Length: 204
Image (tube, rainbow, N blue to C red; front, side, top):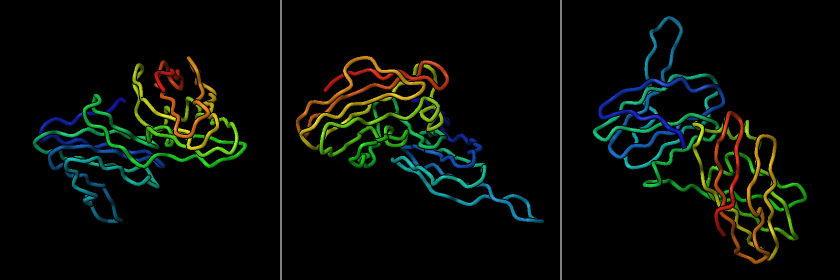
């Protein structure tokens, strides 16, 4: 996943577009400030958080907002998007709660669902889960061409789950889980061009 680096004791000011979030990852303390302004007063900074040995993800900002990150002794990483994610070369990867897709005739995984890394469902018959469009995936976080992200689809009932694609996304390899409760399928999502991704079946 593409992300930005702030070197030791460095500072970066980032503009986060309206409706998007910022993720900040650091080993040693890094301060994250939101720039605020009031009529007839110079702009000031409000401390949002201090990040240490974890990953912070802000709430979505209502308006475009400048965020300043002051890195500590180990530097820091940041990413901006609807569902920003930072994977540090596989060495440190935060894992949030898996995304559970409700059973139904129309089952859709959002970009944020996919970027949790684990998508689950409890189907009552063989079902399909549609992936987001390439444009929505590109908007969700910062990708460079050639970046990839692995995710798992897990069926929690004895029925097949089939991954279907959307505009700007193609799939290579088998798109289904086995019809066994607890069966999983592993996929790799790779950006090949703007708003364009290929999903490869890599395991499961």
